[in-house]
Length: 216
Ligand code: DC
Image (tube, rainbow, N blue to C red; front, side, top):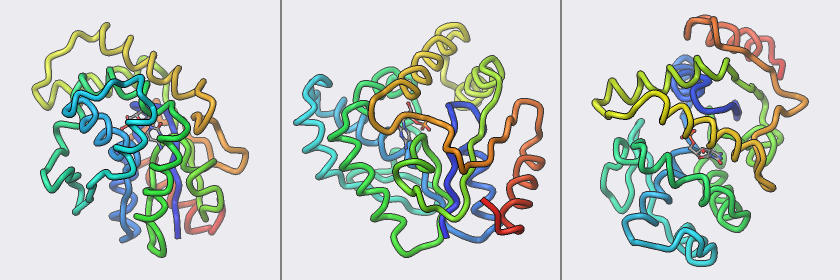
């Protein structure tokens, strides 16, 4: 069974997908982490981010593993390192290359193959798992999304101005919605949930209601 969740940054996807997978007692895949790890590797290796061919090769050879809720790149725990503003600033250019996405989508499908997963990202309901049993699109007001992301970074001790972070977040969302391949769109058969004024538990209960009914 695949529960596919798409939505913009700060919509609550990650927190909710993790908790939902626990409630359902199934695995969890954060596809954003796959693109983040690739971005980290490209920056570490000093690869020219305009070189799509080089990035595609890098993606194809990526040594990436997920254990529990941790992300390992080349057998090192990079769970924290992939969530810094430096990655946020550089990721949009990499995720826009169709040939890079093709490799990453294949990787994501391989990871989830034959298993029961909650999978979250931007193109999960549309491209990665168009036949998912359950599909959700989580959204929230843009100021609320920026506040959530800001608090997340603050809790980790990462210092960044609110305005700068909000600008970066809006820029990334815009790029995610406008790119030619794998753009963030609301799939016709996905359930849309605006989480702006909802507590996490409320969102999860709403999703469980649909899942228990066996309805997309
Ligand atoms: O969900 P996130 O913030 O970790 O995602 C990081 C970036 O990766 C974001 O700009 C969107 C992109 N992404 C994507 O293009 N496709 C996915 N399936 C997941 C994330």
